[in-house]
Length: 266
Image (tube, rainbow, N blue to C red; front, top):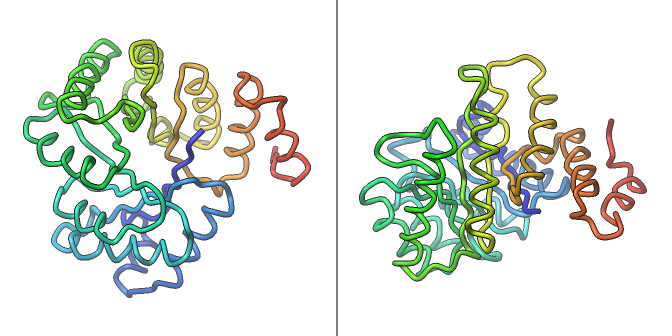
């Protein structure tokens, strides 16, 4: 199970303030805490800084990798910002977040995946926007799989993202996502499936309860990577329990270890 820590994002007020002030210490502490809590990758996103993204994104990558020896999930829609960040990436295999099936997007991003031997998050959306049902999500996943093949990118490096949408605005979105995950897992068993978990609960009370419950459902369907807040102890405990129950934790050793270390917060 791959865990991508989501907290270094300038859409978060405190991160935006730290970037504005050049407060490397704060950003390092956020990275260190996520690593300590179990993140395998640190997501770095400064998409709110439209005019400065090409400058700030590689700076953030360097600050984070000065603090922790973890690879970075480089989160940007701009190929030039992605490439600038890839040039300074030095720990492990980078992940690019993301590519879509929109015209011209693959041609701009997938050569970078090849050049830097990166992993790639493939969002199931195209010119028509974010699909609302499982059929449309799977159809776009098929397009993306063909694009990967054309560019010589192995499916083992691809993380399909069927895009979690809030159930507060459309109650069908939870089940539509889960159905898409199951079908993509069946069609492309060598690929990975990732999601931005917290989108599911946007606009609703007690969001953490919904996030924990949906995470267990997503794992059952075949999600094997999650972008989340690893400092949420109850969420991480739910993840550990779900993996044990689904037979993804051999002899339940991770669960037992978490219990001994006091990490099964309830």
